[in-house]
Image 1 (cartoon, rainbow, N blue to C red):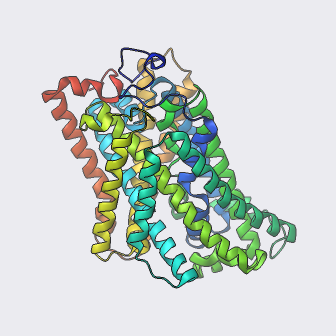
Image 2 (image 1 turned 135 degrees about the horizontal axis):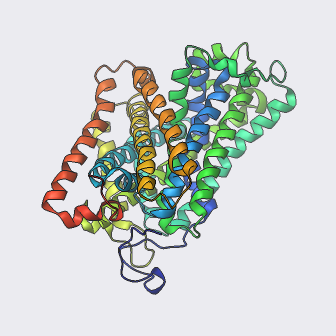
Length: 490
């Protein structure tokens, strides 16, 4: 197995090496908690599902989730195969470096950093927005959303200093709570038969032939952002199969969960009424169904759980972003001090602190600029992050083909060629739909923002490639370490 950790001694003989994370710290269940929490099931169901129903695929929304899940399962086949060969906290950029060349890998690294930081800032802004509103409702005290954001960033930095298992336990508790309330709603709606009885029309494939299916796919994909984080924890996983199990479990569980809960929401209003209800008031659709079937108390519970759900995503993306910076620091693509792990917990504590400072600073700029935390920071960042992540995943699919073309003896044709190519076609199609419908995804008329947000990722990629070329010429030893020292295709 090709290792990307450059250390002359096995981890067992040097358990507190400053340049590697603690091995055996988290199992498949813990990794699954991280990535499913990153997807924020409750937040996605409340904020995104109504948009798919009202402005996208109508009552075929459950099928949209299953279709996205199928494409991501194809992607996961090659992705987990790469994680076994290259257990690198940099995951996507490392795989692209190994499959498409180191220079392309540096370009991917820049896009990854921007995508993860944008996601973290986005989610922290939503947390601040949700917590500020909840506190004012419950206590009458008005706390600026930015002040609430700092609580989430502080919690993420504190947990980022601890062993990864601590964060997994926290996320596990938060995730179980938000999933439980939606499952209770599902049971009650199904037992009562919904508004018009049990209806299987939402699962009719003919429903996908509608004008808004492209918008629906674009919205639905954003519900899955974060699942690729499984491979980030490969170096800290308890066993060689932990990442594989967590990746497939995360995709399957979220796909079935999203499709099932979306179907329940459709039943709650009736197939003949839910599209109009979702289009008329998307922000309250799920709350209205909970209030009707579970009572007013359920509404208060959901409002609290939306806050904890968004906190879970902040913790998860903070962990992932820290590990990306750590991996780049360890390979000296970024300053080497970022690539030092804590002597006791072996966590990427320096990278964690930097991520917290940058996130707080970015949020401060938005706050000083008077940007709305939901209609501005959240919508811009969420839509932009989708562009960044799906671009990386599409490139990674091609990288899988490139890597195993040079290592044909390692995997079969399905893993090395067929599955990643099918995934690339699917991901490229979704990316095209996202770009075509980008102004609608932003949710407001923002003029040049609709151009500048996706353009920023293209600029990041170009700057990364230029920096990679510079490394190759000026620091060949550093350039050779990008992605773990794989043979370059350049």
